[in-house]
Length: 146
Length: 303
Image (cartoon, rainbow over all chains, first blue to last red; front, side, top):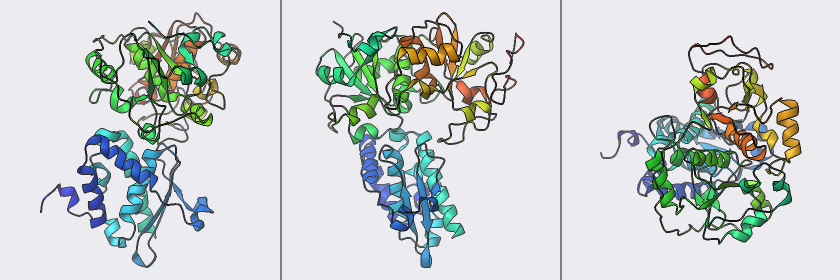
């Protein structure tokens, strides 16, 4: 095994995302986060038309709402954040793409410090990364309650 | 040679009209070689989504804060930053940003600590530029680095520390946070994470004038008459007062500092950047809860 200890328990989807970020220089990591921000999927109608079914993530500075479910044991994550908050959109999109399709147990086993293993400290600042930790924590809590 | 002042009539009412430029003026002066446009936002990625052509980016967290000590960068780091951005000591700097120039005002205040002479805000900020369908680009400007002199930061005139606030009782304090933070129901703005202060409330005797009241719906500054009504008629300040403004970490109060200093012409306004995240966690400093300012504490207070 190689790589940081935190990555050993990561599902392949999240490990790919992590490797994608770590392969880049600091500035390009920021641009990759922007790619993710632009690639946050639209909410399906059952959430888009019922925003009250989404949970507000208060750890993020920008208004971001999230819902996570695991019908038949397969995880789906939905999130909404405004275009004026691309950092928050990017955080949400990384988790929507990385957690979506995982088995429930795999998603619950994702280390809580995953957001801190993407090499974004210098590009985004540790303070802002707390927003992604808050998102991940709330997603896992919703999945546990599902 | 410094760049001319924007002659917009609204600005001429203000004490220091040269501190503001309009979107029209900036559009005409974007290619001036003596001018550099700086974008400074809350969101670190907003600049990358599109910015005013030629604008460079300054991030409050990554560029202006010292990465270790809770303080601003020193003269060497400021010189490196501005030199890298192609800003000389005599360059006219126009700063703009999101959220009614909240973070842009903060950057301007930090530039002031280093005595950068000609630094201005774009009235209405990023939102107004976009609302007017003015051009944005994702192209990074290619600015040649310049030599910016190493200037020691001077905190004495516009920055207040906790000890200064303790010695200030009896003079006006302005708390620019939201009413819920002021009264002590929350320690952060309603839209923001709860963090970083162990107690809630406000500094005794501080008046609550939320910073955003100085901005109109379109993010531009309110007229001088409206600002005087807000700060003088309602909050009871007068231009010769010695004033300290604070918020949670000193960013929102930079906006109020800008209004009082440059738009209303007060010459003794300091920003307490330790603000509530320091005061609300300090041992034995006096705190008042509720909607009323509360009494001036018996002096001297030694915390």
